[in-house]
Image (cartoon, rainbow, N blue to C red; front, side, top):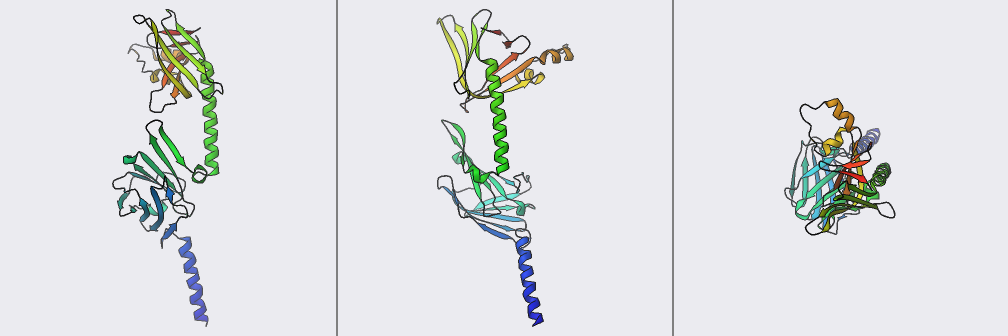
Length: 290
């Protein structure tokens, strides 16, 4: 009787050890209640962990040589030392860190999609996808609340608030009309009503057609680069005989302002602002506020 009781207890302990070591010694399988990823085209079925191997079972898109990246539970990149294959609806990853894999990205270049899979080592599985639309550039879709932790969402909100503040400061600095002394070139900047963006227009007088030609963008955000980095942003070269300290002193008054185009597929606009003289300058002209 004692021997039987001992065997039962030993079995229970081994079972508990197997659970706590899930994915490390005996391996583990995770199935997910919500499996559809992006428009019913890609379904995640389960993930199986074994020593040195992780297998992701799926159906939908037919992957082959698609690039992937592997991430741990903190979504830190696990590096390049792994092999992977897609075959018959199974992604197999072989690596020393295979049992640490909690997240994956899969590039689907044929459909302009990057899949972000997270919490594969728990029933909490969540996903996001970056999709490229030809009329709007890259856009993110998916359940952000499920994918990111509360701390990550708050950190992102703080970054966005800081970014909005920097953009609004840049918009306020530039708002108005800036004209060259000869009156043949100018910039016009107009902030929209809710201060979320700014119309930006670089204009030059076309004497043959007797009209203003213009390069125009709508800036959805802006950021500033100061000092020598501002000069480097404009590829302003320096003579070999130039005094570095003198250049650095002058550069401290310069701010390169990049106005980020709301059209992600199009170019941004960049201006160089001199805070001491309150002018915009480039290689050929100086613009004064009108």
